[in-house]
Length: 66
Length: 226
Image (cartoon, rainbow over all chains, first blue to last red):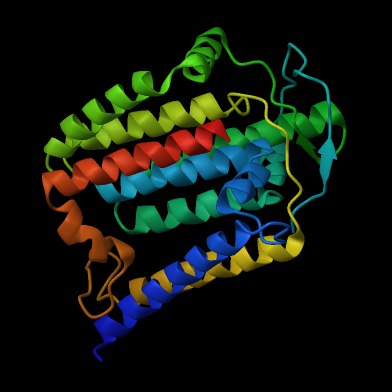
């Protein structure tokens, strides 16, 4: 396995864990919040709301803009 | 360390925002983890030679610091108010009302047009840079005064938050580990790819950019509605 393969494998593992957490959050009486609920909770204050929106804007700039 | 939150039911700010000095703004800013994260990200972007990204992130961080400093002066406390958003300006208020009332087709059609036109341009050229920065700045302005629609808040258990935080920290740590193994911050590495490097083949095509732009807009709309 090359170092590139290993790097991709770790990314895939992290995304898989996130996917499993999201699935677990859909169960009844789950103590794990869904990503949507988590965002809603984080966005109750202006710093949380604007910080997340700025993070999203930054993603767009990072991938498409210079 | 995040400060405790304070539930405040007053619907709006006082008409005249209190004036705050540079010192009060800096003190408010360094106590707010979100502002520190924005500044840290801005620093890395500047080091990587992305001045437009730096400006957007620093602009958001400074605006937030001024807003927090004003809240601290107005409330006489350093606690973070929840549900106290203030009244938007007339223009932003109209835009917020328009977005809140818009039907899906009314939003989907401009989004598709945006993705088709912006994705057609070369990546990192001036038109997509200005278009994406404009949409980002617009979203920040619209989000400033709270959610577009009032929805009940759900309680989130700390243990659940911690699990998601671990995922985010792991992703950020692995991304940084790969970034620092590049020859330099501005030179990509095939052996230690960051997410950007891995996405390059997909985003290098117009169709890939159009799909990614649509996805980006969809996520942004989802956040604005929260």
